[in-house]
Image (cartoon, rainbow, N blue to C red; front, side):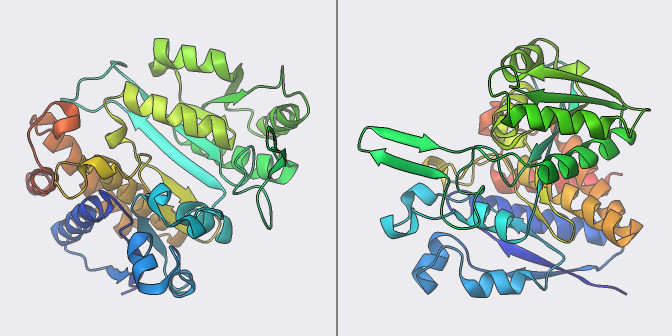
Length: 357
């Protein structure tokens, strides 16, 4: 029986609490399916790694991840790192860059029992993950910003055909397994060359998928439409910065940013990482919402199932999703959803909901 090595990087702030909940829930989902497929590899990152190795992302951690099928990544609190560690990429950005995790995939859908602004929505954002206006990811070395005088800063955005093509193909392929509708989000009316290239390439790729309906919106209009009629969107295809902004908006529209899952995927590796941050103000209090990392874990297992052609991993992922839906439908909520359940209590409710299926 093939065993999949899964890296565990707890991160900072609420990271250790929610990642521990995810590992516990995944283990329970394995057992409920009568399977033992996953081997956990715990690796230091963030403040823990700085204390141990003097580096928020040690070389040993990156080398160990090369031998993993995928990994769970908790949020990082890089603003609290010593100043010497704040000039380069943060741990998440470095992993996305080093392993060429070019697709940031962020689903957002309403769940039974969870109050939401968008009464009914089921969309997924395909965010290009390696370039655009994120300076820490768009250069081979250094960053894409220059302070030419104390009062003048230039920030560069990078747009390439290669990056637009591969994220577009990923989005259109995903649409074929959903409702066959892709919305391209851009700002080509103002940033005519950069976003013009992105839009043009995405339109070229769209011609290869005649069975998929395609439209496009400027980012400002897209945000307004998302608030007004989130249920009309299926797959959103966009750039790095716009995808980051729209996914946070969509997360709040369906209930809470704490519920927003994500994976960062490339051709060979994938990293489960919830869309929210490290929330240091509530760290250590066992009140963080673990839904985001739980559903991110399910996304990782689904990705692994597709890459390895292993339906057993898909079964485990489906158990996790059923458990989350069951706990939510039963009215179990954490504080961000005006509930009283702790992180560990919600995880236990997920496990108990799995047992009922």
